[in-house]
Image 1 (cartoon, rainbow, N blue to C red):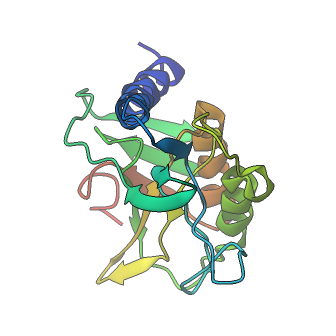
Image 2 (spheres, one colour):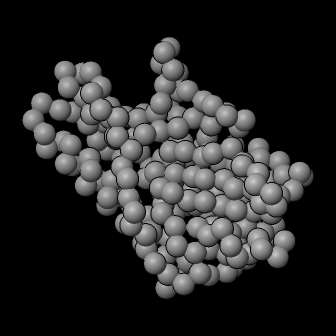
Image 3 (cartoon, rainbow, N blue to C red):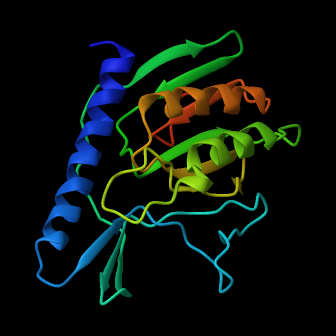
Length: 197
């Protein structure tokens, strides 16, 4: 199985779970479901937080009589299992990738003060689709969350929820990580490529 096929399988497994959760809530009489709503402030603007000022999306909002009665982040402990793979992405980034969830992706890189995270910010805003909030249960193809870089000793970790974004968003995320100055990263595992850094 090639890398693209593997990523498609990981994404499809998550999107199937998200779609099922949406369908279950839509089946309740008197409710309306909005898929992937952005978290907004009291003025209706997309709310941002953290050092990198990222916004976020939840998975589902449930409404009754046009009032939000429940905000749902779908939980999953299911992961597509596969043997860890290593590959070079572009000319400057080496990646080791183990099992991960599309909605629970962790990227670990060696700590380095020279990283500039602007490309990751730009990537996130592009795939967040700020202007594409819908008022329906249709998926947006959007990413949901990216944490600030968390330094822990010799490593830096970013956690992400890729939401319903396509595999192209994952690929562009690797481009952005590389453009931020990272040359070595582990995805879905905290040991591996970064151990020897």
